[in-house]
Image 1 (cartoon, rainbow, N blue to C red):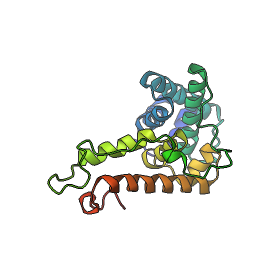
Image 2: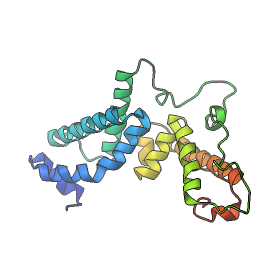
Image 3: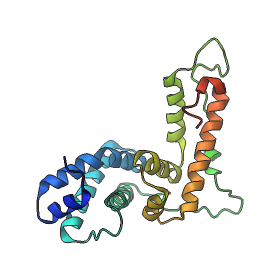
Length: 212
């Protein structure tokens, strides 16, 4: 399998679909995760992803992609914008991820992490018992519950950073917001998750894998 993206884009410009299939295989799973974070519906996410790949192919073949940014950054911007288009098309309300900045005078960055968040606790109801060892499923269950509770303008950034493996600068370029804001939201989300985990488990139970 070819991994040289410049070689692949050259093949696509020449009408060779082999290279494009390589791109699809390389990007489809992580791009689907991003669509799901925005649309939260499987069929719509699949349609948005397919549309994104068509746009990418046409853009490369027509020469619209000028390789000024990396192909992954370029593609995830297409995915992001396409998913928002689908959201607006199928829902009769504004998509709140477009409004990254909150204008309330009392708002402080990070307030959204708890504003609509119920207290997340272990399903066992026992937060510090030494009788029950922590299980990976318990920890992952709380992490997933927390991630699903986040406002989109946090969860999409975390998806891009941890799932799509984009850099802070790449995310900033895609979302058109300052890199400092990206860093701040990743930090605040991680700190809030740590706080929730430590309220449910002893630090020694969690070991190092979730607290680093």
